[in-house]
Length: 120
Image (cartoon, rainbow, N blue to C red):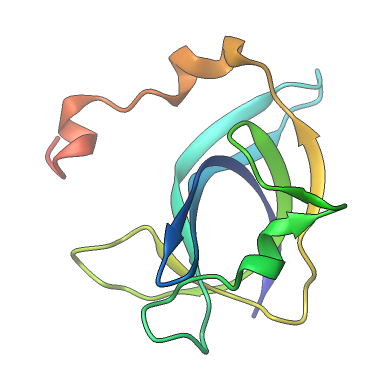
């Protein structure tokens, strides 16, 4: 079952003529800040390699950029052991720009080496 999530965009690159978006899940806190969660790479179910059609990354006539916070629908993880960040998107939920965060969050966004290489 699809669920709306907040994704902090950290990458929006080109892939096969479309886009590859990646970022980290955010959970809002009562004080207006966010808890930073795991890496997510939204995957389009109808494309050859999961790329996101470019028009989906154009919101309010602006391309997604690093530090944009977007609301997206995530359906289910793909459960690829080599890409645990891959999640299918729900095509029924339109992406929307929810906010933007400052570069002050950078320290919270850094992964430890154990996380980066899949080891604790």
